[in-house]
Image (cartoon, one colour):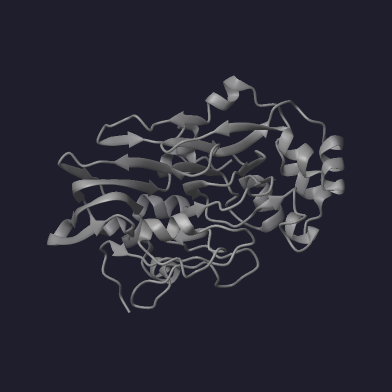
Length: 347
């Protein structure tokens, strides 16, 4: 079945996870929260499966087809010729709504080169967080070791599952809506309870979890079958002082411009994200994109006369072939896109 090249509104897609959360996702979408407390991640426009699964995690379009298959059938229509030249039929992007009902474990992700060598994947898992909501007295995320840490010390923490030592070694950052944090591959990190983010990442599910006890069923789930001796080679053990941290954190909550580039500049090699507030209309160039409407309501129009009403909680996938878009109305949305092909390093 051919799918029209126009924006598609997507339903929630919440594969089961090992940690609690999901209430903020239900509230955003105006749902009843019936997915329970273990629906903390909504994989939006996903062509990615959970690690070890052939299907779980894939987004289904309203006509019952998987988005992955529709894109593979018409990659140039969905992604554009330049993107296909750089990435073939991969969207190059996974977007999630992530609502941490509890602190996530300390973990990290592999680089492209590590993933090619050990997972036979073109993509590692660099990611970024856009904080869109918080709850509790001290919403916090953790990123990067405060001081350079030896491999021997890290190995001991992992063998003994010394969670307090792991967490204490990381920088703790108080966050509020509008803050963004870029997480390069290898950087140890954790999201604290009460933090709700739109997460952009490379399209894989490679999480190497140092702090597996009380979260995962076995250490094998932590090192993804590699063994920790191998997995920990992907870990950034260098120290991240205030100056280095400032290079990956942005505070955009008070920026009221109609278009705000949300992420640290170095993220452009992996993905792009803009906050959109039409005033009264924004024109958007053709691109594969994921739209997440955070507030308000309005209208999305595209080439050939198509249009759709959009409102808070809507998530849409936009094909390149929809052409130029017009977004109008009193609303706030986040537009997530893969990198510009010419900015993508193949190192």
